[in-house]
Structures are given as C-alpha cells and as structure tokens.
Amino acid sequence: MNKEKGWIDEAEIIKSPNYNKRNDEISLIVIHAISLPPSHYGSKNIDKFFLNKLDPSEHAYFEEIINLKVSAHFLIERTGILKQFVSTEDRAWHAGESSFNGKDNCNDFSIGIELEGTEDSEFEEAQYSSLIKLTQTLMKKYPKINKDRIVGHSFIAPGRKFDPGKFFDWEYFKSEI
Image (cartoon, rainbow, N blue to C red; front, top):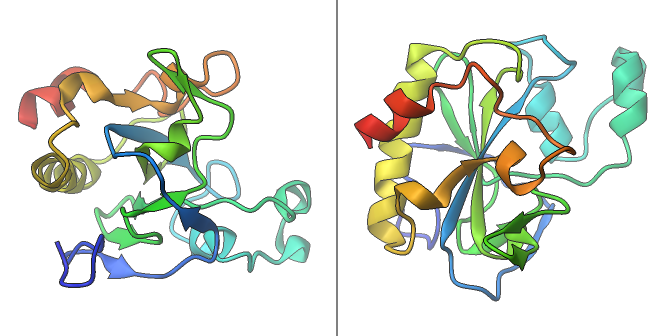
C-alpha cells in the first residue's frame, strides 16, 4: 500500500471525482467486467468514463451513459496494467443496487475491481496475474475479506448484472490467492 492512505503503489493513479466517504468496514471485493464501447479494448474510454469525460459524439453507446456518474477502485486492462481511481478507504460507485448476505448497498463495504473485458469473452493471463497480486494485497490490508467474500457483480445484483461472466475462471483465481 502507498504512503497515502488507501492507494496501491503498483497502480497508476487516476483520481476519479465519483466517490464519497465510506462509513462501513471493508469486507468484500466485487469483480466486474467493462469495455467501452462494448467489446472494444485498448482505448482510454474507461478512464474517461470514470472521470466524467466521455465524448458522446465518439460512439452512440456513449450517448446512453454520458450522464452516469460511475467509478471503481481499480481497473485491470487486458495487458495487466493496474489503474486506481478511488482510494480503498473511500466509497467508489461501482455496484449500484446490490446486496450481499442480506446487507444492501455493497458500495458501502466493498472494493470494486473492473477487468477490461465482457461477460462473453475470456480474460487474459496478464489480467489474472495482476488481479491475484492485487487481491492478495487487499486481503492482507483488510482481514475481513476472505475467499468467500470475493464475488462477481452478478452475485450481488442477480438478474440485473451478469459480469464478470461465464468465462471468468473462478476456480483458478481462487486457487491462486
């Protein structure tokens, strides 16, 4: 962890304005998948989205999401590059309407990790490698997080969200952390 509270040394820091103060103890990791526009990789559009700087004239899909205020704590690009947008000590806006073990509003007590990808595609080995290292770091820092408290967005928002999707290799990931 970085000297500045809640920031990871290994991450490229890009501070999003889309967060607020956290009141609950961190006890959950939520894994997501994102690509902007959908199924397109390698642009800076996810960064722009989390910074409220998407240009709606660049793609029709951006017109649908331009007014959303969204962030995640972390993004892992296809190449394995790790970016951090919100301090883990703060509440990022990644989960939306959600519930875990009967407790609503997962943003209050979770860390959100976005993987560049879709729910219908496989993730890269470099992404798993970065995700495993990041998860190990977070589990050391926040002891209430264990393997049973690392879930996909689909688990906390069933029927509304489907990411990280059927191709995310939970067995491999959890065996490595």
